[in-house]
Length: 579
Image (cartoon, rainbow, N blue to C red; front, side, top):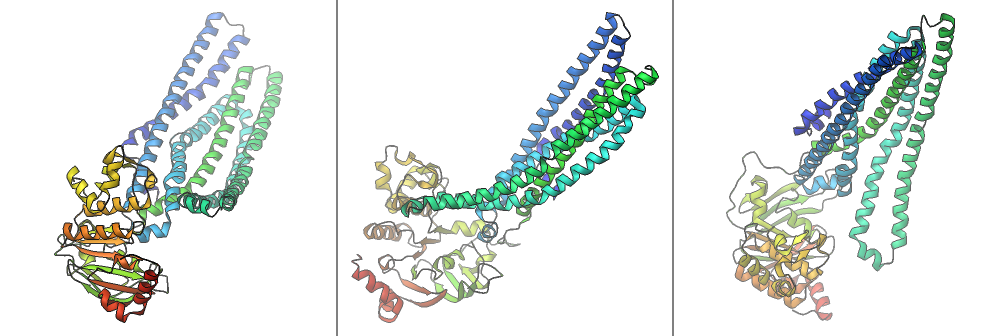
């Protein structure tokens, strides 16, 4: 896992190596300085002349400047290396998710993927910076300070033998008890983000049903659960400070008492005032090094769960991949479903589709109707391999779709999904998702066929009008027509409209269908609709019921022989539905 994550260091490898080297230089200088201070104190105590005092003072000043230069440089290189590492890691996660099938997205959930790309990467970034900086500084400072303390203070350094194991044990226990609470937080972050995402996307529904207070309570409950876990963990970690202070003051008292006693009794022979002051400094350095160790341990504990969650995404293999020797040419738009059964999860007992078989000729217009939950959308998602069949096969142009190159297949099958999505950018930018090389004339032609040109032309900026995120500044019907125009620009072999004209009136719907006949006559057109008017001019209509095909036939045949089609027809006609 660590090896996979470290692949994101990339071009920041040199900075990542330079940082520890700078830290080692800073530590060496900081460990020399107390000894130099001791010499300075002894010189002053001995009544040395001003030149000696100034010489030691100048040495200290130069050492301080060098230490500052090392420290500042290490801070700069560490921050640049860690932020670069995080940038590369986020890009890798994002690029990985682009390869995922719907099945993979369903496995993680979009909210969890967002958390992993943001919160989890931030924790890993912080851990990486601590590893290349503080995790190097602490052990070196501990070793160098201890060596210098024993070299300078001799018997007084025994206090460290008492304090270090006591403090280390306490810090390990603190960090160990904080681990479970930090682990629990990340799963609850997913729930919190899921609540936010769901609420923002369904804001109109929330306001329409006046459920703001309910959503506030739901969000508050998720936030409170995170607060409790963090409070529990932070309460444990907060014990670091009193434990540290106890050990530090114990060490100071021990050194002051026994050091003072040795100075008085030995008349400064075994140890003098300068050495005593240096011992106090080394004591603080050692204890702070141990405290840094505890911080690193806690941070790594927190980030380890984040690392695991990120690694899950990086290791996830798409459920849908290219075959070993893919087919790059699609003969025509004919479609065959041969004994197809499908379920969304291998663990599920129920099939969303069961025993589906039919043939569609290239260039035919096929309507699909059925009640809510009859798996109409599921059926068409198998054609472009948004999901793979569980049993049976789906063929396009006489070849199993699993044998095609994915790019080739999806370029040939244009799908306007039930949930229309527009991206931030101009209308032109959104249209060119269908064909990035399309000319302005081709854009206008496609929009005229989709009955979108009229309203686009009325915008002050026309086709250069900016679309806000999610297309919130255009109506549902306008959004649908732009999406249809975008799909037409691909000039696909198969065009699938999944209830994509539900927000337009029947007259506009009819004009759109008429445009298909002239613009893409050889393209197979599949229209999923709730309205009979949208499919009654189709060559044939497939009637779905509970994941199975109830009937297939011409609209006239179904009106006479199929109960479901007949009931829908009569209900909509009684409701004044126009044809």
